[in-house]
Amino acid sequence: MLRFLLVRIASAIPVLIILSIVTFAIIQAPPGDYADYIRSQLINQSGASFAQAEEQAQAYRVEHGLDQPMVVQYFNWIKGIVTQGDFGYSMFYNKPVADVVSERLPRTLALALVCHIFASVLGIGFGIWAATRQYSWIDSLLSGVSFLGMTVPRFLMALIIVYLLVFQFNVSEIGSFFSPQYGGAPWSWAKFVDLVSHVWPVVAIATFGGLAYNMRVMRGNLLDTLNAQYVETARAKGLSGAAVVMRHAVPNALHPLVMYQGVVLPYMLTGEIETAIIFSLPTVGPAIVGSMAIGDVYVTATFMMVLSATLIVGNIIADMLLAMLDPRVRQYGGA
Image (cartoon, rainbow, N blue to C red; front, side, top):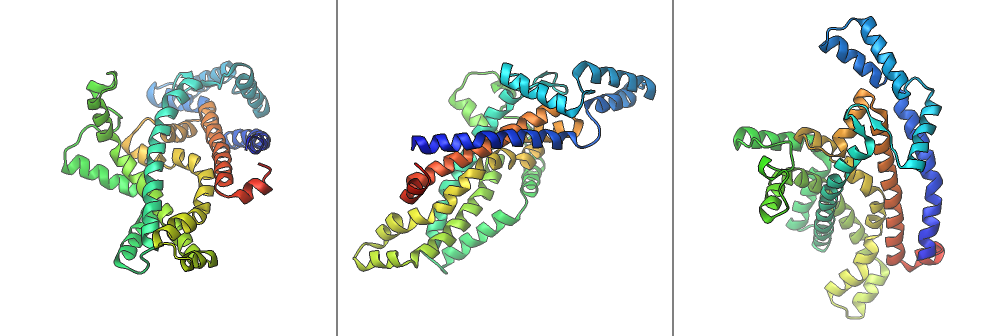
């Protein structure tokens, strides 16, 4: 297994390098940069003339290296990461990019992991329940729930919940993780309850979408597996229905969902973009969208690299889980 892991890590390094180049090039492709944003702010808010604003914008480009060719900017950025662990300076947040990431990434990961655990456990459980009761009212009900979860846009669900909370229940504390009195307070049961009261809409919406996908895939795969010859053989040997399903059918039906874990990590981080924007939560999604809109290139590039790294890590985790689940993968994958 250690060899299996080392091979996957070694093959991921060149992929990460290529992704960094492509990401930086795509971010820099649209015309304009953060200096253009400064120029527009000077004209619109400070009443400066175009010539004055352009002069200050050009001075800002020179000071922060935005006037250099894209290739030079890229290698300076990579050099800072490799030699100093410096991901650049956020021009909008006026602080190092590492500080922006450290503020937003942990809470986003925690939120996303909670949603993913709920979606996986409930989705797989409901999928097994629906498959073992095919064409019953339970199967029909769960299939309807799955259809809604995969078709209704998340931003629409978020807007509906915001409307109900604000206009029907008069909830005013939207857009934060805690109430003001718990912001800097040490952890306690009361603070945890306050956190749950603020984030439950985001958790519910993200869980609903993931649950629907897991349930639909698990149901379809399990129905195919239950008709396999080895399952019929297990039944013929006298095993109980529960033993046939849980010991023989379910492990093989889980293969596609295990491979799905390879893409679920970046999906968890970006899947909350619409919901987090609507609820104004300080997570990764709004930071990516906001930095792209104003040309804060190092924030955008760093967060995109984080997403690329999570995609690679997710695929490695999926490969290892699949190797543990299926001996054939260990045999032919070099584990």
